[in-house]
Image 1 (tube, rainbow, N blue to C red):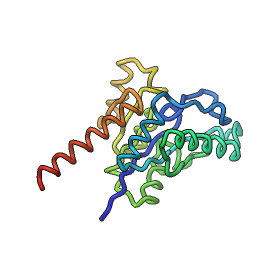
Image 2: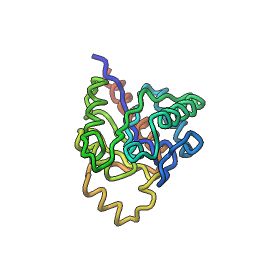
Image 3: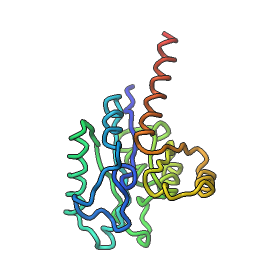
Length: 198
């Protein structure tokens, strides 16, 4: 049985620079340095990437569906310009007050991705920049990865240790490029072991 090599990525702070006021238009979407190339490297190694992002700005009336679609079309074009590909964008449009099950830290969005792709989420890395992302990954059974390119960049050592204590399986990387390095090294090591067994 062929298993899809799948990675779930948060959006803000992972692929693009985080903004407190939400990314409301394509021109406000600025990629994190090295992130587009990191996705390309993962793609070229056979990994499929999907985005899972909370977008409460929709529920708060700060951004409408046409605007979010334009932002994501721009993001996909920026990725394509670097030879990279995101297979799909999943987003939760709800505010925390709506108590949906798709808003991270709840796992609904990640579970939906697992169903859609027929993926064993235990084999799926999930990359985020907040405790909420890591909690969603843990609840869905994904492998949690934290990057320090977004909101987590502001954490001191003690705060980072407290966050890690809440989701102990978390691996920490400087940014998406460093995460890609980790995954590709691990792939290479696994291939070497398999090669040695043949």
